Each structure stands twice: as C-alpha cells, then as structure tokens.
Length: 129
Image (cartoon, rainbow, N blue to C red; front, top):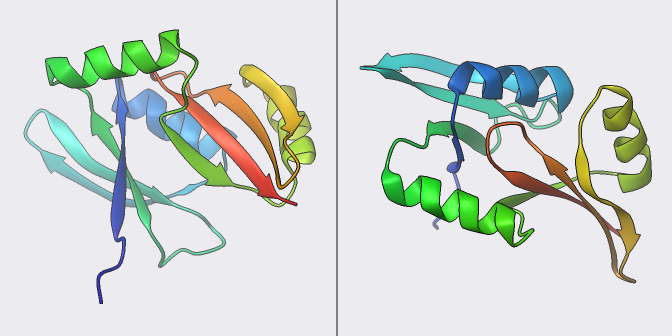
C-alpha cells in the first residue's frame, strides 16, 4: 500500500518558514538536517506527530518561483490544511498578525479561509461541515 509520507511547500526562506509554521500555525519541527546550502527541514502536526511531514523546501529552482508567483497572483492556494473550526482559527491567527487573503467563507459542505504564509505561498484552511 502506498501512503503519503512527506509533502512539500516551497519557501523563499527556511528560517522564516520554520518560525511561521511553528510559531504561528502551531506545527512542531520534526527533522532538521543540513543539506549543503539548505536543510531537510520538516514540520508535523502536534495532533499527529508521527504522521505526514511537511517539507519546508527551498524554492531555488526558477520554475518553482514562477509557479508560486502565478498562483499568488491568481489567488490560488498552494496547499490546504484541515482545522476543526476555520472561524476560530482565523480569529486566533489574525490575533497573531497572520494576513488572510480570504476571510472564512461558507461553501456548504466546507468552510475555507486563505492565508499568506510570509514565504511566497497562499495556504487554505478548511473545515468540513
């Protein structure tokens, strides 16, 4: 059986990304290994510390930067994270200074909000209703 082990989000600054993803979003650092000029740097949800790791991957390849810029320009999130209550998470994160490009919006079966991760990505939060 195939399962997801690591997913990536391209970031323009690994240190800033680690600070945001742990300090604001509440993930915990799982792996931090030097790899030349960068690091193999992953975070996980404290709710599932042995679950899927999110790799904070440097966006050094020109294609990754172009894709990120195009997605942001079109308002398209790079990835999505599940939360128990989008409204409460929006309020908590806004209080921490996180900028949202879409306030919580009820689409019937889901409520979503979109935030700026400060590292070149839009991230969607979702609650299934």
